[in-house]
View 1 (cartoon, rainbow, N blue to C red):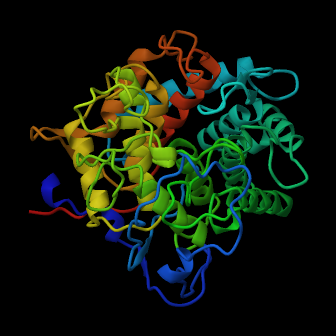
View 2 (cartoon, rainbow, N blue to C red):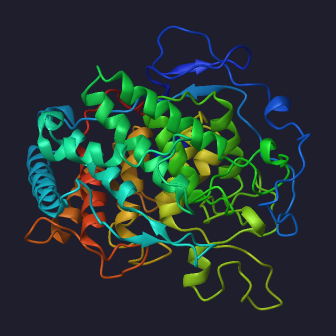
Length: 468
């Protein structure tokens, strides 16, 4: 398969949605569903700008294009394969991954507290509000719940899994969220993904379905759009931040999209299409991103909001906003791998086709920065977040083999399995010596490791199109 003319399996067995009609939900059965027209999605707001927004920091450029047709991606899968022949890897790698996953789950079970959760008392702070740390135990526990329900066929019959579910449900707020502080969106998005996996394992729970729907509505209400007085020319538009007060970023926007995808929200929903506008504004691609910082390598930065930020620029000594570049050098923001995979899969969640210039450019960046030894652009920082994001992205893209820019073919599943197995501790845990974004905590990193392995083990339902 030549990467220059790649046609991923998105076109196999997928639904192309026209651009006229009513919105719908993925997996809802036979229906004709279409997104609102661009002029409705990108209309000018008639609301005053919300007091939480500092308009002096916002930049304005023309909005990126929305798709003329929306492609419905494959539905989410919440269970690993039963046999090796369901996945395009060797029987040896399948067995290695299964063993490592079971060891990881056993470690997580040993670290569950008496209340049913993980990382009790741990807090994290938004990148733009470091003085507003909030608890993250519910989010971490929701991701652990997902790991158990995906990895064990009888998970919903086991007390430690039911205890985790009770712990998460007890955190539910009156508005349907699961945290009311600075990390509300982050926590609620993680809970939606965890509950969606539990729901898939126990379809008869109508109360669980209602809780997921309420949480999705909360995420959509917290998305920055016309409701807060924004218009589509402004760089906050369509994004989500850690909570409902801070500026949006790609990491939290992709978590929101992960959650909505896991919950079965169709890409033709307005929230998905507005998010696509924000995601496009974080890409280094001049054809679709007119921000002054944007380059043209096809990769992604951390956020386009407030004039743009990149953790890779910060790591390179150029300042998170490129403010430390020499005065004679035009301001630019560096792309890095974890955000590029986040942007890549977000565009597919939102229904962009394989031949969209944004998708092709992101895939080309991936080919040029292929590595399991580091998170390209950040070194060891965020390595396990990167593994999990990469695996999610390549599964939704239905890519089995990647040909890098040097012409070398890679079975990414096998390479990821090897990378994780060699980094796993004897007790089944993983931990990152580069302790940033809580990756020094083995509970969180083990969850990332297990979830990444599970993506490599999920049954393959479609075969990519081979091209000449």
